[in-house]
Image (cartoon, rainbow, N blue to C red; front, side, top):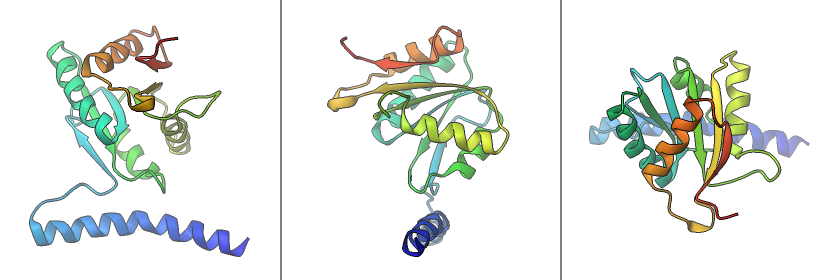
Length: 169
């Protein structure tokens, strides 16, 4: 029990370490990676796509497509998943009314792990946006920006709150 508690506390402390290292990197190189997460066109967004890794980069293309269609969409990319950056995500997503999480994992019989963790983090901060969860890219399948656009539009229209992208059933 004591060892697990210490491991847990050490892991939580890495959030500060990641952000501290990013600040040091900024001082030395004049460029910041953003710490535990990064944002794209989120300043004026009413809707956000949350993802991580290469999928989050594809989501930036989708956000540009959605913006060209008149939808104020931004992206939050998670750079460090454990410990879960709940506080940083709550701060980043506090002003959006809709969140679409697109991730390359699934908690079988439920939703994606990021969506589940994000719901808990936002709930703890009394932030209650509409949140949709999509699983994509399992087994190395490519996920195209057009597919992201499609599910974001479905979510914003209220036609879907969870699902799979690019799956032959």
